[in-house]
Image 1 (tube, helix red, strand yellow):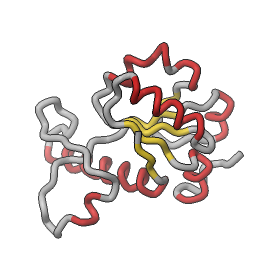
Image 2: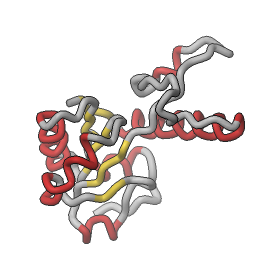
Image 3: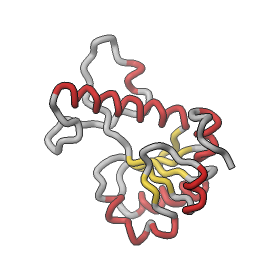
Length: 147
């Protein structure tokens, strides 16, 4: 299990969205099974020379493990909400997702437990969002409500 900072996740999502937009414009799918997709660590594009070709960035599955009432307050756009206690019954959806998983909760403790659980159950690339949605709201998206 890895830790990821809010700014790193924001950069990763932005890079993945840019790659998807380029692929859509070119008429290809970056997530096609036969595509040469590799995950680049967050910020990997920052060190590429201008014009350098690179494999598309694989879009992470951003997993919100908070309770229903917390999600009503605010969330990271595009995230999948599965409350922590329901993770074991939906494990196959996550382990078989075939992409990196970034878990988050309010401050990062519950999501760390979920990330470790997923990793021990076969998920290959699992991250915990340091500081949770509280840090996301403070550092990345001030429009996201804090509680």
